Structures are given as structure tokens and as C-alpha cells.
Length: 426
Ligand SMILES: Cc1ncc(COP(=O)(O)O)c(C=O)c1O
Ligand SMILES: N[C@@H](CCCC[NH3+])C(=O)O
Image (cartoon, rainbow, N blue to C red):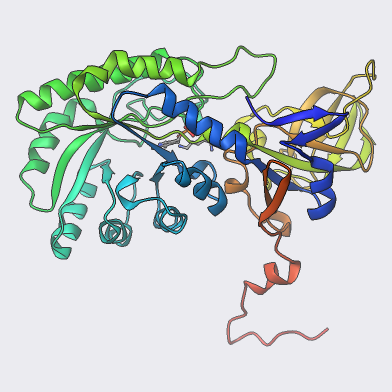
């Protein structure tokens, strides 16, 4: 459920007509709903109610300070994968003891930053990383709490570019190696194994891969405890999918996901941590765009937008589907015809939708891409020297710009000429 609905023929974010925002900040622009963000956080909290748990929001999905701060106020922790995300989480007011640090390539500097902040634990993904963390922690006179991220060799049944739980991916340590790794870590002075971490992929639309992975984690918990390790935390990662396409079957709900957690690992007396990103932020955001031209093609029309793959890369990168809806509700019975929706970037792949059935859209009309709150703005670039898209947050009847569009001067001004180049004077 989200808070983007038609009222009086106009698409609103909560109580604000999106047309009003488009006029105020221009397009393209991302718009987020506070109510949807809050609702999604609460739905997870309800799904895990009664179990000791932490919802560590995966910042990678949307790391705008206003988004993180909205969730932090509700008690969310954070799953971070870089020193940058760590700094963002801390700056937004996430308590350090609610921050977990994931990722296959943490640098010594990032480890130091995490230890200095006093984060909850590191999810360790390899022996070289274990050794590096042990060394860094000892040099600082600290002990780093760790979970090993185990790779359970489970097929998440999602897009291959976002599946992480199969043995051939770069993620985690093979689950079979875990007993030896925990023994090794237990003998180190700079690290203390406290739990197990698993994350098998993103945009999962079925529960059984979670069930298989969590069952393996439960079995591993038992065997590690039998070997004398105090396993008190289970970090089950993120990955629950969202309904991108209205016509597809809806993915499972957090409540049912919570039931899988209870069934598989709920009896172990561990603190349960989850790292949802997409389900919290995805349907809490839209990308607004305007039609620049409508152009006749050989087979069908092209609707050329002012948004492009640099602003929302998911369709180009994963062939992802985003619903594209006009800000002005089409009249009942409006002619629907297929068109290709594209951006202005000089790449054939700069295409948002092929042969999409759409109401008539001409120059100046505005549209919204639904479900663009996660992996949207965070994956944007300035390719073709297109300034990063502004971001706006709505709460009730108010809206605020939470990241302004840089001016062209600001964009160009970030580069500097080396001393051996005299600026050419035209
Ligand atoms: C370690 C880790 N945790 C959490 C997430 C968040 O996943 P999602 O946005 O699918 O919930 C990801 C991304 O897949 C991840 O790699
Ligand atoms: N960026 C991906 C998700 C990656 C998940 C990160 N571990 C997407 O848009 O679907």
C-alpha cells in the first residue's frame, strides 16, 4: 500500500498534488511519502512483534538524510555497506548500537570508522577480511563483534544480477566452512563472534528460498552452539520483494515473512535482525517526468521524457518494470495505445518501457514512475552531464525539497583543471 492516489483526477502524494511539486521544483524529480515510509517500517515491526528484534534499514535502497532520519525516529537501525553510508546513518541519528556493517570489501579505514563509532557488529564475508578486522581492532584496543555472512547456496529465484545466495556469487563464506571459521575467530583477540548473517538476494517474490536459507541458519546455530560458540544474534538480511507490476501476483507480505522467521529460527532465543531496503522505500517514492516530444517511429510512437536512464537505471540495468502513470487521470474511455517510453540519453538502452499501453501523452504532459523510491535516486548518475535529480519529501499537506537539483555551474565546478592546463579563452 502506498500514499500516491488519484483525487479529483489528479495524482497526489498524500495530500499534495504532484503537479504542484512538478511546477515548484521542475522535472525530473523524486518524491517520497513520509506516511508510506513509516507504514512500511511499522509493518515489519508488527510482523516481528514479540520476538527480540532489530529492523536495520538497508541504506543502499535510499540514503537521503531525510529518509534515514524519518526511519531513525521510529527506532530503525541501519545496514550500511560503506564508510559513506555509516556517516549518513550516524548523521541522521541512528544509534551506533543499531548499525550493522555489511559488504565484501570493507577497507581498514571503514573498519576503523565502524569501531570508533561503536557499531553493533560487522558482517564478515571472508578470511582475509576477518584477519584485517582482527588487526584493526587490536591496534585500536577494541574487540569487534562479528557475524559471518554465510552463503547457504540457495536459489533466491530473482533476477540473476541481484541474487546473492548461490555458491558461485562473491557473497559470504560457504556455509560448510562456518564451523572452522568460527573456531578460528574465537581464538582471535580482536574479534568476537556473536551471531550468523545471511542475505540471499533482493526482490524475492516467494517465501520458500527464505525458508530454506533460514532453516540452514537454524541448523548451523545448533551445531555452533554445540561447539561452544555463544550465538545470540541472527541477521537474516533483506530481500522481500514489492509489487512493481499491477498485473502480477503480489509478493508475500511482511506478516507472512515474519511467520517464516518465527517458524524457522524463532525458537532459538536469538535477537533477530532484518535488513529490509526495497520494501521500506520502494513504494514510498515516485519519479516525476515530463514529456518533451512525441515522435513517430517505424512501428509505434516514442514518448520522449526529460527523465533518462541516468536518473532511474533499473529498466536499463535489470529490464525492470515500473508502472508509468499520468499525473492527470485519463478520461474514462481514453484511447490506450502502445508506445515506447524513452529518455534523451544517447544510448539505445535508454528505454523505460517498450510497447507499453498508455493513454495519449503529448509534449508537456507529466507522468510518474511508481515504485521508484528504492534503488532510484541512489543509483543516479550525471551521465550526459545531466545534473542529479532533486528529491522532495511529502508529509500530509506539506512538501519540502530534501536534495536540491545542482545548478550547471555547481556540476561543472566540481572539476578542476590541473596546473599544466591554461584555461582556454574563447
Ligand atoms: C547485505 C544486504 N542486506 C540488505 C539488502 C537489502 O535488500 P532489499 O532492498 O532487497 O530488502 C541488500 C541488497 O540486496 C544486501 O545486499
Ligand atoms: N539495485 C538493485 C538491488 C540491489 C540490491 C543490493 N544488494 C535493484 O534495483 O533492484
